[in-house]
Image (cartoon, rainbow, N blue to C red; front, side, top):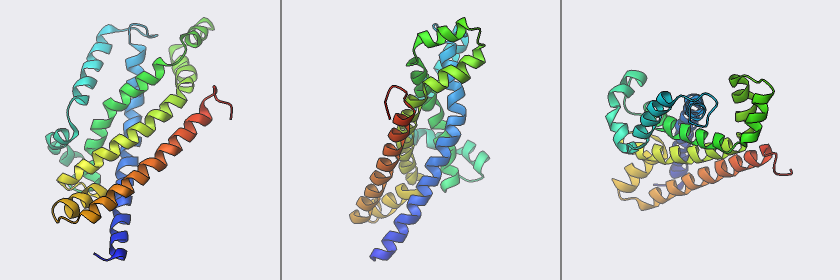
Length: 221
């Protein structure tokens, strides 16, 4: 393969990968943040203690997280076809990525909220703040730096998942690495895709850490 063709192939694959990962990360956080908040506030030390709700949600989250992505990808093919109308391509890959990411993000959000100083929460309660106000104006703002760090971790994780989806026709850099590097024994193309994936992870990692540091009130800018 000529150099120009390789660049074009990698460019297209990178765009497809970014589309899948960014979209699935955004959609997963829309569901993952509320779920993580619910897990935190219904815990035994939460502001809305409810053992039944916390236990049921915890079991669902843990069960979903325990399924390897490649198995989950195949297991929910009927659901993927129902939602996306197909089981191959970038749009179809977004569906299992979201399903896999939501419980993972929920646990990270819960962990980030547990880092918030309990004294801040108690001070808000003493001032008569409602539970919603505590969540919206205390918990989430105070946990913002940790949430941004978690977002970079989620992005890198979903990037790896998207590469696995290449085995089932998911598209993106993963499909390029598998189709050319594995099936056609073109190792140079496979390593080129690995290099691009590493660059993408590093860029988003640095961006996420920069935003996290900027929002951390404990660090002087």
